[in-house]
Amino acid sequence: MTATNPVVPGFHPDPTVCRVGETFYLAASSFEFVPGLPLFRSENLVDWEPIGHALTRESQLDTRDARASGAIFAPTLRHHEGTYYLTTTDTSGIGNFVISADDPAGEWSDPVPVDVPGIDPDLFWDGDTCYYTYFTGDTERCIEQTTLDLGTGEIGDQRTIWTGLDDPHAEAPHLYEREGTYYLVVAEGGTHTGHSVVVARADDPTGPFEPAPENPMLTHRTMFQYDVHATGHADFVTDGEGNWWLVCLGNRPRGGFPGWHHLGRETFLAPVAWEEGWPVVAGGDIPRDLPGDLPDSHDLPGSGFSDDATAIRHTDTDFADGRGVEWIWRRTPDRDRYEFTDDGLVLRGGPETLSEAGATGLYRRQTDFDCRVRADLEFDPAPGGEAGVALVMDEEHHYALGVVGGDEREAVVRLRIGDATEVVARRPVGERATLEIDAEAERYRFLVDGEELADARPKYLSTEVAGGFTGVVVGPYATGNGGAADAPARVERFVYEPRDGGA
Image (tube, rainbow, N blue to C red; front, side, top):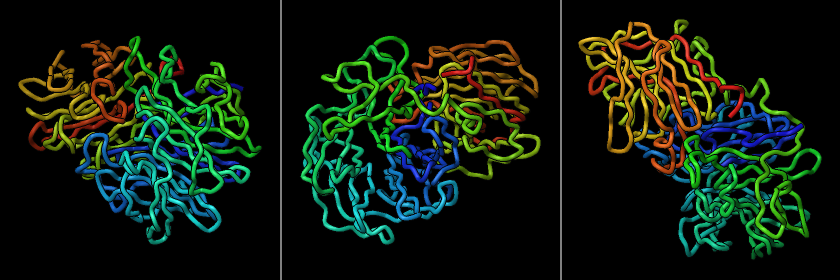
């Protein structure tokens, strides 16, 4: 059977993976979104079932004041002596910390702060010693390491173990042991088109580390003809038969060379082989005397997304059962504005618009270039009230299909691109309306009750235009446009579905 990349599509960057028995677990970065740190489970590295989030309580994470693409950066997920551990960085809050759980699908602990600088921390055990390795953000010190007491957060002496092969901004360090040799895997070249994975090895987890002779072991930095760019930030795992694999991030640009990407950085999978004591990406198409490339597909004991994984790529809900696992807020929400009822999701807009932090909105990731979004809305606003469906990259880059109150109730299509905001279409609408977004790789079409009002290009919601580290999310919103909305909006049904079954 053949597995096709990406294995976790949409905005799921900086993947980290571990195996316990026959089950794999995966986490990804979440930035300012709440709940934070999405978690997945798989039996075959292909079919990833979402099982919740690690950061679900305000005592763990509060992102009200987080900047766009701030807060939770790259995590590391590990299992040791019956306990699951996650370490990550809250760049808008307490910095580096560790949380733990007996069951990754259950409750995770409150954070234990770790007082080290920088981002991208890693956990590695050698006997009874837990090593904590991280990127300092300092071009002189680069990758540092210390020992860690997981219960208290107390650290030992700090030492530099890597200053970069080609780039002193080496990130995402991970340590592994194989047959008595210790391997340090890091990301270099930034997280855009120059991204890469380099590897070094040593006889001790503290180094000194010798770089591989054929670094980088994975990069697409010179392969602009490929469908996937910016491959990097890898984490390794072994399966039950002793085979090695890596997960990494990448993006899928559209629009011709050099392209732009709006789905965000996604999670990809590749097999790893060992040649003369060094890991190499297996199954790539280019010669071994060039850097490894990521295979588009490879044989695995799976054939795509299972029924349990459909929440990644399909939503059809009347919200009677509450907030599904795929739903997220852009920051720590005012939960009083959201009510999940047998008659749908009731939204109460505050004064904030989509161009401001704190706006009322509930979203899921766009995981497919070609998809359909539908919201059945009941809303009778007074002047100033507004509710609808939005495609959001950040406060300065979003598209909205909404119903607004005024002299008459109207549906509008509003585009915010940087400093420019424009209503590009409007038409009268009833108290009940069906709002639809028909997405293609290079076009969004906005429809009301089956009539197309306008279209827009996804390009202007891309990282190349907006910047940042996230991807497009889509979902219902409400706003009082400067004041509290006088009437609630009710989303009776929301549907997100891939068109023609694929990304």
